[in-house]
Image (tube, rainbow, N blue to C red; front, side, top):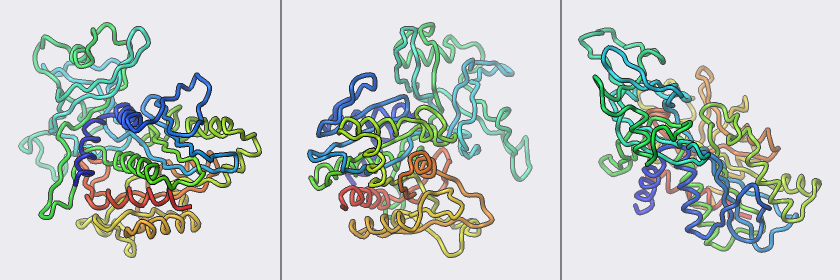
Length: 419
C-alpha cells in the first residue's frame, strides 16, 4: 500500500508531461543520478545519469563493467495524456462568459471532461528564454448542456463548438493569462509562449469493496512511467544488473503520433544510446553490435475487457483488472511484440512470480498503437509491448487495478536483472 500511496503522490506531482519529466528526474537525482547537459561532453562513467528535454526524460545506468561488448536494456513509456491544450491566443467572450480557447490533444473521451474543475498545467517560456513549470489549480470548467434543452438520447459534441471551457463571467478583474502568470510567479507580459494542457483536479483514489481499484487521470500512461522508474531503482539496488546499460526512456507526444524532438520518432533515445556507446569506446560497428544485443520493453496501458461492451473484445482474449500485466500482440504490427520478445516477457513474469495476460484486438475493432513499433523501426532493437489493464482509457478519469501496478513493476524489474 505504501507504493500505491507513492504512486498517487507521483500522479499529483505530474499534471503535465513537463511536470512528469521533472518529477522522474527529481526522484532519480535523490537516488544519486547525475544530471547530463546535452551540450556538454557525454558522461558514461559508472552510475546513474539523467537528462530532461521538454516533456521527455531519459535516464541511463552504467554498470562498473560496461564495455562495447555490453547491450542496452530499455524501458520505454510516454509522459503525455489526452486532454485540451491552450491555444496561443486563448481568451474570448461568448454571451457574457469568458472562455479559454483550447485545442483537442490526442483522443480524449470528450464527454468525460464535461463538468469537471480543471487546471492548466505545463510550462511557460519567459522573455529571458527560461522555462517555468506552472499548475494553476482549478480555474476552468467545460459545462454540459442541461437535459431540458436537449432531450435526444445522446448529445453530439462538436470538438470546436462544445469543448471550450469557461473561466469567468462578466468582466473579471483578472484575465486568464493573469491567472497563469500569478500561478507561475511572473508578470503576465513576461510570458512569451506556453505549453499548457487541461488537468482534472480531482485527486486519484483507491476504492472498491476490497480496495482493489485505483481511479485517476493520466493512468495512460503515467502508470507505466512510474512502474518503469520503480523497476529501474529496485534493479539498481539489487546489484544484479549484469553488464548491460539500463535505460529509462519516457517520451512526450505519443498521444499525437510521437513525431517531435522529444517523441519516440525523434532522435532523443538514439542520441542517448549512441553517445553512451561512444563514451564507452564503441565505434560504428561496435554500436551496431550493441544494438543487436539490446532489447526494449514498450510499457503502455492496455485494455481490460469491458463488462458492458464485451463484444468489442476478441472472444478468446479477455484481460481483466487484477489479472496481472498484459502482453499486447497485433499481427498488423500496431504493437511490436513478436514470438521472441513475447517469450522474453513471459520469462520475466515467471521470474517475478506474477501472472500474465494477453491482449489481441477484435478484428472488427480498430487497434491503437504505442511507442513500441516506432522505437523498433527507428532503431532496429527487438521490442515487446506490455502494460497494465485499464478501463475507460482516454477518459479524464481512468480505472486500474492496484495489484496490477505492483505486479507490473516487479515484472519490469525481472526483465532488467534477468541475464
